Length: 154
Image (cartoon, rainbow, N blue to C red):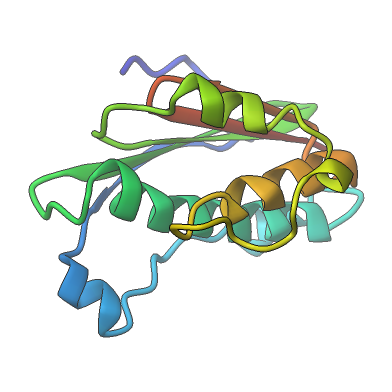
């Protein structure tokens, strides 16, 4: 991945997170991802970056479980890009990618979808993302292949 040149006052970095084994996950694995206070304080609503960080932590777990299938030889990649108007976080795993059905799930309003997990335990993560879009806590979501990009405005 190429880095774009970014003025020093803006955040731009990539982080690699090793995938835990299923046993490590069951024994209390929690992904570490958060924004520092100096980033949070750039937002009119300081809850938006905090909520984005929480969503990213959930996506990391989904990547470990569904994308990388708890294969410790695979990684999850986090790319953070900030500019004067927004903050974007891209989460990418080494799995096969999201199906068209899953991508289309994001387009269905939450009032038309069940609030609980569907059979097999899938779907609640995307329900949360749809809800955040509707509630304007997320400003944009893009999904391509095995990558999801979340954006919030300052």
